[in-house]
Image: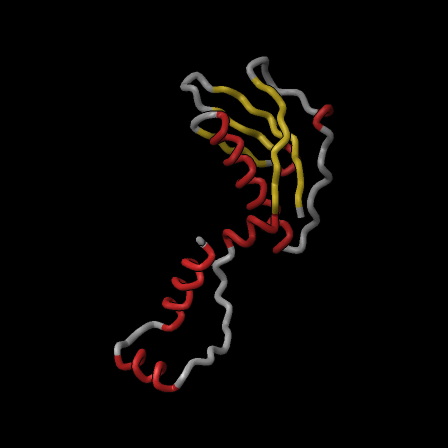
Length: 130
């Protein structure tokens, strides 16, 4: 599921940006504008996942034109949220599966105390990084 949410961005005196996402009643900040946009997207995705996991409905998304910044230093921008990508990146819940390998390989690996789960995870990550 993909969403675009309006957010209020404010540049602070130290150069950082604070961000408010009124529809989700959350705030975050970033060291610069690109970082603030990333942090806003990450915070929004996290909040939306929590709402869904708790069985609560997602709030109605406001039109960008309905928001105005609290002061003149602020501006409104849309924040992109991809919940599927966020879940893939942040879901560390273990998944149990059956593994089939030759008996000789199983015996040799057990003799050397090789952790099958860790080895498979490392190998899959290496393959995916190609």
